[in-house]
Image 1 (tube, chains in turn red, purple, blue, orange):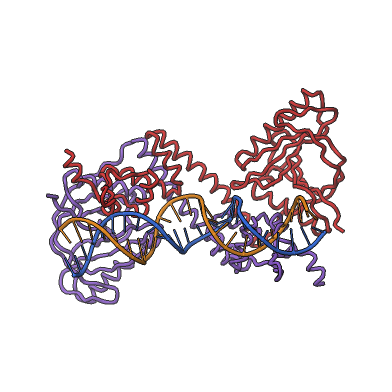
Image 2 (cartoon, each protein chain N blue to C red; image 1 turned 30 degrees about the vertical axis):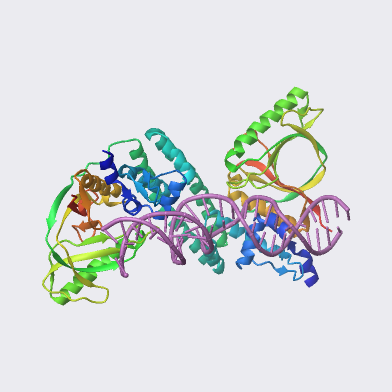
Length: 277
Length: 277
DNA sequence: TTGCTCCTCACGTCACGTGAGGTGGC
DNA sequence: TTGCTCCTCACGTCACGTGAGGTGGC
């Protein structure tokens, strides 16, 4: 029996041909414990694989063709059939999401490169007085942004209610860093208020200094990536042309508590500015 | 004027914020000549960028978000607007193609992982006598495969005609290596013949030795990746279960000159075999 | 003895991220 | 003097590809 088993073991070259994985890949998967050979000769270090390891090897190869990282493949392999299938489906759903974003980006780039007119934005400035705000800050990637905005707004309003203070203007989010797939902000959600409010777990009370800001109003459709780049770009170039300097992180001032129709005013894109010398 | 220009130059940190590119990325793009700073201080090595370089920088950043390689981005940047737009579209078309393949692969994997029945294949063997063939071999990736098959077949038939020989059986392709996006075969297209044929530029005349082969017949729909994996897998496991050894590269024997209906017999998937001892 | 297969480093690829250690101007 | 910004290495990441140099069995 062990005789028979030993005889049917495949050295790495044969196993490579049967599994369609390179020698280098097989050695790496061994090293990572992802696909250890059935036997390793202790003298020579030769790797010998069992024929029934071919199936696992091919599965790894196919998952790699989806560009699934090896760490994630390891997780798939630890699950039973139906759960593994769901894991693959979940991975692929993420991939499709990222493709959908890129598809919009391609459309945007084609429009820009061909020099077809970008949408027009009315940019103006306004003076904001010093203001008390309650705020919550978190590092979020793009997928977690919208839930965070809503959660933070609710928490802040609740905190004002508990403190006996009342909101004195529209809520806003300050983007201290970029928010996308690779970058996670941080994002600070603020609610301006009147009266006296207490800080709490995760809730800061601070003063937003008086400042002038350049802004433009956009619809919900224009607030999606990559269309939103045009709005940011419009405000930035407007300030640049007038010799203004951006003095703080950009912010979005929201008019609604949640959703609006795609073509209704949805928020202001605003940059604090000062006239350069 | 040069005064004004010099004053408006941005050091790398400011340019990084405006372009949304990391310092590391900006230094790399400088090194590669993709986005050299307007001025480099010869003493300190400090990089200074012109404000109008922001546009190019952002374009690079957006193209990178499509996962376009820097070499390809360089090409896009060398083109004028409309041509650049077409380059982006062409790149994206390739990406969509690769997504389409992966999408089918995901469906295939889900079926397999859930253990839903794989299609049944009738596998049998046949004895082939020694045969004269004319053949052409080339390293092709999956995108170039079908054109090569047709081109080679025409060339070989023409060569037989010129030699006064005549085809004596269906044409076939021998896959000496895997053919996919990363791997390029090689693939050998063969036409068996009777009579006497001359070699020519790229056309080899050789004898295919007598052998037994295990094979199954599939439709055109089953000949697509990844469905075709089932047919290959079926023949391989059939041979394995009967203690046969595969002795040469797998081959596909085509019944038609071009296309068939999706559910009609289209080709045989065949492996030369011998009974193991 | 020659070929073939296997072994283990070690370095390259691609597009950066992340320190380490140091300089320069306000 | 302290902080801030900038500089240049150098190494790490990820999943391998590609030798180099050497061993072992037929």
